[in-house]
Amino acid sequence: MYKQIGILTGGGDAPGLNAVIRAVVKTAVGEFGMKCIGIEDSFEGILGETHTVKLNRKAVSGILPRGGTILGTRNRGSFVKMVDGICVFPEMPIEEALENLEKLEIEALIVIGGEGTLAIADQFRLKGFPVIGVPKTIDNDLSATELTFGFMTAIDIATEALDRLHTTAASHDRVMILEVMGRNTGWIALHAGLAGSADVILIPEIPFSFDSMVAKIRQREKSGSLFTNIVVAEGASEVGTQPIYMDKEALRLGGVGSHLRRRIEAETGKESRCVVLGHLQRGGSPNAFDRMLGTNFGACAVRALANGQTGKMVALKAGEVITVPLAEAITNIKTVSVDGQLVRTARDIGISFAAPNESKL
Ligand code: F6P
Image (cartoon, rainbow, N blue to C red; front, side, top):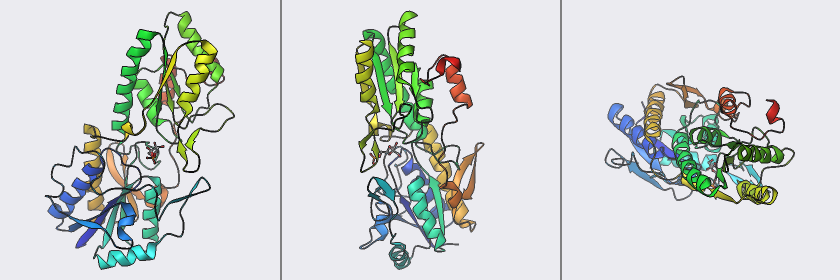
């Protein structure tokens, strides 16, 4: 049994990070008698002049409903860099980190993060250091788990935004566009679009045709619905074009909503507005589901370490938390199936994805 383990959070923050930290500490300390050290600001905390914090029950008291992460996080730094607009893992300072872990008497790590953070965690596994990953991202784009914590809260927020935009759209007979996050996948847009009654859902997995979208707006007009609600994933793009970046160098997606707003107004003459939901989807308190999932992931991660597992990630499968190899967890991005049930259901109830051949589907 390990005497002392370390825990860190990496990548973008997501609702539920503190729930995981709390569960890890409570389980490690209470159930297995291990000590817990929080590593601050992702892996940066174990480089140079290390910055860490002792975590006991008192330190995690009251953090379950809190957004963000009490440990701080980074989605850039010594381990991940942008070079010419490409995300690269430079010569990682793993040896320095390992030396510092030894000095700090940390014998194993629990790493909470998305694809990039877990890829770094896997490097520690390759060096023989015990590590267990916990999947986090509002994008829900990790293939080895059915759900990541943070996603359900993001959908709640996006759904509420759509509900609110609906009333303005209907009152003013406008086209309202909500741009949501999700990187190169459309999970948030698809789920929130269904829950928030969007008329058009644009996702990266189904390149859209501008003409199809305009046809949908006109068809609604003809049938007496003088407004249209569109939810667009930040990574969605028109057939034959690339996604729009607000910062190409830093690979920050954004801008497709305003781009569409201008074109729709010019083409249809209808007043149109765009709202970019942005980081509101990541901030603030996790919903009940993400608190529960984060807690379950955290406790299971400690149990996996205590049982001698390493190089694994906890994952949700058919309602149960299992462990899968870290290496497997970081190889494939989970994308929306274009002929999957949710897309089919959306089409069945008249939602358009503005595909070029939409009317024939
Ligand atoms: O991966 C989470 C996410 O919020 C994506 O949906 C989004 O594209 C990106 O992070 C934004 O990152 P940043 O916080 O660096 O702007």
